[in-house]
Length: 333
Ligand code: AHG
Ligand code: MN
Ligand code: MN
Image 1 (tube, helix red, strand yellow):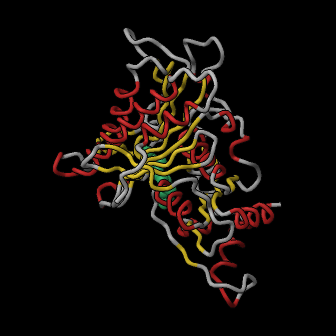
Image 2: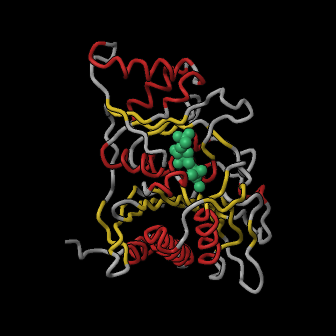
Image 3: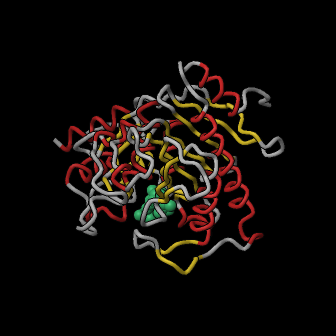
């Protein structure tokens, strides 16, 4: 039984260590947490609230939106628009950025999110999540444009995700390691349960959608082939494989027990460099993974060093246990 530190207490204690902190960032995080609690509730109720199934619309990514994609996007907007900490928000589910509307005051932060990650899993009751990233608006900018969101991942002030699984959990980094919290529904608070999480540098577990194998590049084909050969191949050890199709669940598994996750570059749709989105998925997850001692790369460059070219840009993603990601980078050379 954990009766320890609440997330609110944790964030406030962190804030006290930052000289000159105004409390703005702390309150912003609190609003994000409130949104996550609401989403956890709606996701948990599922069909009892009639929220499963398709919304009958398409998002800017050309993907069919689920009702819950739309609802969770709205929860994120409504929870975070009023408090005066943000200048604007950007979401995987919206073509353009969302400027904080009148009569609310505007603040100095930008919030970026994937309100419901893994939404193809929602109707079959498999884990889904919410991913978010916080940036500073450029100095003096009160009317941000999409351009102001195109900052490399190294500029993130904080990033986190919520995983709506058997328990609802939240993992968070503000650049001083990664800490994990579990929602106590009876109390209505996230409680610190995973302090200073570290990804083991070695692993014998990989995650990739192998149905795309014929579209991969040779370095990834080689890597997976060697894993599949197990004890009889060049690696000399058996590997295990997982694919949940919710990035949040895969990253969470990697934080807890190690592993490597790949959604690599493929030739399936030549107009897209990868499937996952740099701003909403790849950057926040890379920040978390690196803060936990892992690595995150496209295979050719560090993801957080990429200068984004557009809000909805996609990138290849290879992340997780350091030594496996390093091997994959070496294969790409
Ligand atoms: P989203 O539901 O936000 O569109 O993201 C789904 C992503 C990611 O979470 C997952 O790793 C991947 O898409 C699954 O892709 P496949 O369906 O190709 O396996
Ligand atoms: Mn997603
Ligand atoms: Mn999504």
